[in-house]
Image 1: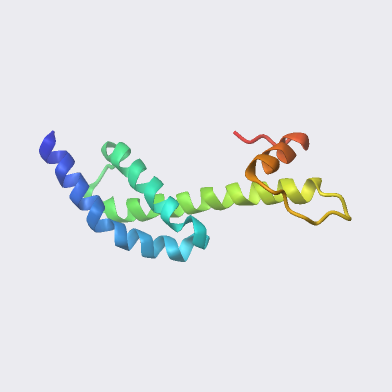
Image 2: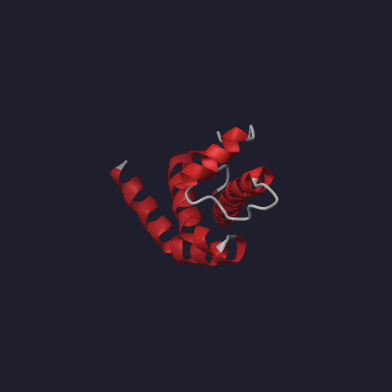
Length: 112
């Protein structure tokens, strides 16, 4: 088992730079590192789900793209909540994430 974890660490470490470049193309700038980090964690946990070893690279890049999309949807949700609850004369964004969450809750948008 120890050899397997060392090998996985090496593969993921060697893949990181390529994943980052891929994420820079598919993610919002601020989400690149988060998407790569979350993807590497997911891959390390779900490696047993990979059916064919030849599909590893495409599987890895698909996970990064899905993570970019998930993060983008999260930002879009906050923007929709803010714009949906703002009065016509009030165009100031919420001052914090907590305020955004309160706004979403007040307009009935589930955050889970």
